Image (tube, rainbow, N blue to C red; front, top):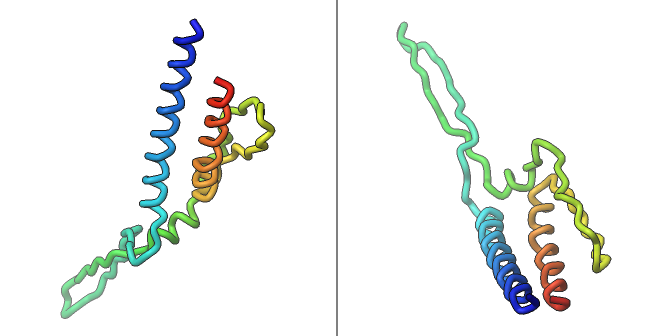
Length: 118
């Protein structure tokens, strides 16, 4: 019935809004600028000291924000094409962290437009 369909659409809209908000929180946490660093590798140094081998291990740290700017998807994937009902012309490719941020901003607005017609 029309009432059930409207309730289903309302539930879908709530789930989309909740998912967008959760994604935004995760994206913001990841993208925070600052001194936060991540150990990305280790440097090992072998030296001889009086006939003894000494191995020194030091972590190599990289700023989290730098890693995110450099991150690229291993495969060039594009989200399943959507019918562009509202002529938003959203680029659905997702190759970089900036693309993830952009899509998380743009896609919920399309869902809100559907709600207007629900």
